[in-house]
Image (cartoon, rainbow, N blue to C red):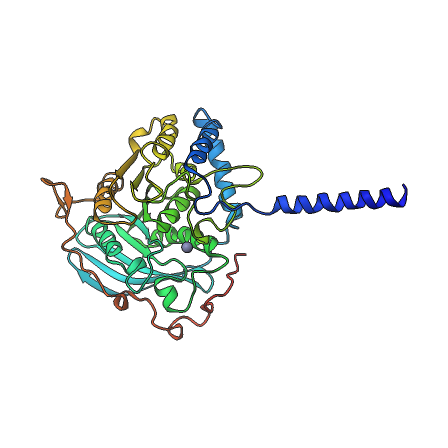
Length: 391
Ligand SMILES: [Zn+2]
């Protein structure tokens, strides 16, 4: 080979390696990654990958695997001791609230509140409540709408755990920032461990575990439901969209949606709930405005493979905006009552169909806090911002 042609071959080789490296760069689908029209076209491509229950199960397994690999959770980290801390019980009308924390990984704490029913016998269903990106001192799990949601479910017999995202609530108070390179990994793993935490409570029936959250908490709800079969009822609120992928790195900052092998979107990820009960709550004022005619029919067509159309619902509020306001909570409660076997006596007005929230007590953020300072925490607690070892 002449020197020049050798050089050219070498240059071509380097260029192609460089191109391959560029192609290997993960594709992130973030925010409005698709136009509405592109999203509809993608759903058609996704729907064409299966035509019966078996084909869907294979597809669902591939999507689930991509989520776990993309989120750096494959294989799943070891389940280390939760070392749960439950304290400061407050008694209210028909329920109690405690502050609660556990270690999702050694030294990495998840902070929250545990709402428990009073006067309900036997094993109780458990419900997880992630909160979404509602900032401020009375945002996140401290905001009144979230406290109402948890208290009302508890008064109907559920044991409810309401827990912080990284860098919100107590996590923020103790110095953690939401802008953390492992946010998606840690929040998804923390949700899985939150199911473990519920199951560790003797009162909880591990066969009845629900999850509901809105916005970024909706993302946490459908990601958990997708990767953890122990969730038996799922109600993601104002988040399941085929064209919008979540605007925060904790939702879409890792390659869970698109690789060389497989493309998916949040409507298909939500469909991984099939055939478990799933309710989509959507509004006209955000990226869920097309749910009744786009995402819901797509998901419902998969429930049909299982003869389970009765287990999937959509409540749509065309004139409402983003959030988990009372109208949306009123749409969630009967679904949880029906599928978790809650008892609405004393809460549901059977004449009007309204679930009474007026007996709930809204606590101040300081009352809800697990630890005031890091000095109060166990010595091995990780320092704020630390990278958490997963292996
Ligand atoms: Zn986030």
